[in-house]
Length: 560
Image 1: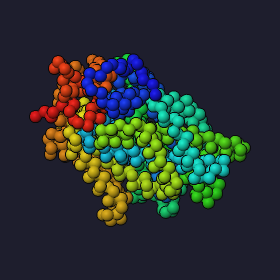
Image 2: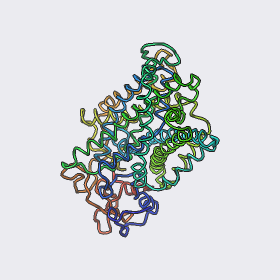
Image 3: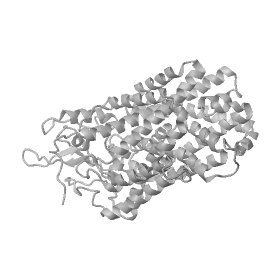
């Protein structure tokens, strides 16, 4: 793992060595795990960051989701459900993406200062980590289906292969992932777009069949309950914005010269991911219905499996051997592109939570393996068969978290001006738990999950997404007003007499020495230490070194 000498200078520590802090800091310099991403490291253009971020949405799960809800609820209800989910995901993802790109922090750091507190956001990290291993298992299952169909490899072995093959890519950080995403995107687009275009041009009648499909119920017209059930499944993807943000935090500073490109990249690669996701869901539904209607009604057994979807179209375009080859290649490339991101982002989430709770940094690779083992267990348990139920349940947790943070940013920060507009994430500056976000998320998730499982009757059971989104939207401003915002900041002064931002409003690149690790870090990542130097001079400590301080001796006292 390389250390960029231009971004970090190693000096002699000015305090007794903290081996845990030094080890954690040096290891995380490859991709600034758990921390603010400094300007000296962010050398990519806005376009490269956007391309890398969008490479992570190459997953084929969208095709399965679209096929499943189309088969279950019919085309009209499924499309309306996809649109409802897309609108909600875009609206809530926009403020989060902007904060990540503007302040160069990941969603966990945003969450801390947006109503949750220093330890309160740990629960949201667990929600996000759950998202990564659920979707890793889903994509791994799809790859195993492709390996079985194309190469005759038993699925249980395919599950193991789809897990092990990811490890070499995730050992390294964002530099390697960015290269992988950029290099593989053109081939992935070609393999996915060409067969769909061929199907539309060569079989125009399939469009009529598509819109006439009524699903298992056979009922024509629009059914609101079916629309909401379909939307609930799609809304499980809401936490994808956290993976987009893992790339967006490396956006270059926003200036007058790059303003247009900067905004396009943030919107397209941030909340804009859902536009591409919705298109893939509709395409997956379209191909599945085509296979059922035109080829074989019994095809519904495998019509929700992407490898069978694309194989069925490829076979109409080319010889069977080539069709099989390309279908397997598409599945493998897609699985690699998304699961390196799932494994990487999941390891960050687990590591962040563990480090904060235990004040110990075990190394990111430990939790790469933990995440992969959980995903492998889910695959071996054949979670693919229960896809709609798993995603519908998980969606309630994801919505409660994301909408709560978005509500705090838009309403509490900008409209009510109760929440501090500049996101705070450093230990000592925040209270352990802020009830505004923490209680709002638990309350909205708890109620919506109860609705999902029928606690309030079957008539309102399909509407659990409305309860999750509605409560998560309204509770944060209500609790912020009731608490008068007193639990947002433990301190308003970080003890550093230097501006946090430059003239363009970007985080400052002024460097300060961390007296614990002997390394220099940029201003936004630093805070004054509670321990002065030998001559009474002020000393500074990085956010990560402070997070591993088990004694609490470096933490500044709360301000009255």
